[in-house]
Image 1 (cartoon, each protein chain N blue to C red):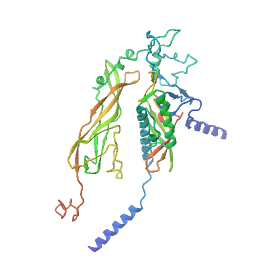
Image 2: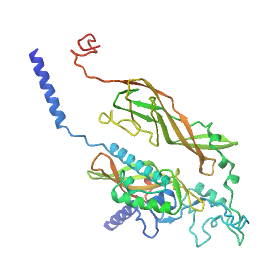
Image 3: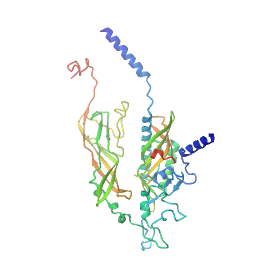
Image 4: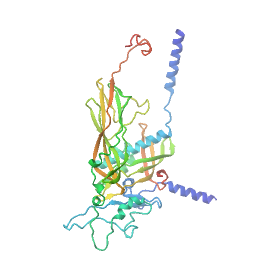
Length: 281
Length: 163
């Protein structure tokens, strides 16, 4: 019984323990993040190389135009010198395109598949998908739509990464919009472009403090502030996500900001309760 | 009138004493996890910025990671850059769970989604993104602020956090 418990504990600890890096395979965490090194959850082994989604374009060294282009081994890892790029534990859809790539047969040197010819949706441009207008969210001003001269007023954008369904070239597609940067126009001539969306002040202790996207007004003029969210896009037509070149700037609704000046005065009691009291008004 | 004034002063004094004696409340688990998530997001944003800039800097990582981890990641990022590989995009935290918590260390499991990372090799071939990956991550409090620093980040075999 004790032995069984001990074995169970060892198994649990092994499963939860971090996989030692650079043990038998030379993998850094960033390689795992990029997918160039994959952790097989069944065996716990690191597979160096990951999966090539699209092969290299042809290298036309001799003018023949048929060299280069890694077509890869046949599905199932029939080439014993290469690792299986699509082990069974992977999501089959992740390997679908790979399997569509014909293996090298004999001495033939087939041209690599043209991803655009194979999947016309891959040729889409930002202009094609701009009609799938991304949800831009809003510009939030803290405190509630007002600020004080000489003190930071906080601004943040609420745009988030989101996915939309639609149809392009009669093909159902998904478009994933990701805010990549923000252009804050504070309404007083100051414009700031940043990768930070900003965030709300957390609690009273953070209120009135400077943030990555706050702005300090120097005059009491009321202004209209705005933010332009610059989106990047990816499209999936059923064969995996690919990035659409370029960006799409989208304006969020503008926000009015009332800018006050604050002064300290001595009053005879509460001015709200007694507006005519000395010092009030 | 004098009695009301006296009692007012007494109340104000008590309030002042209470304020002087109060200590910041212990952050809740949710608050700690939110801090950890923010540190991780900022850390990986720095990875992406360095990839975009084409040079790695441990100093930039030290804003969000311990000196040791910052040095290791700067070395790893530089190796990828030197290899001629380009990679853009960030790991998005899908889920984050507290495993253990003490005054000087927070252990978590986190699940990241790497599908937004686009990696292109020097020969022009494109990498299949990493998808969902489970990690064990520890954070330590930074000395001069309430921010947490990423102290370790290792993949784990247990995928429960990603399910």
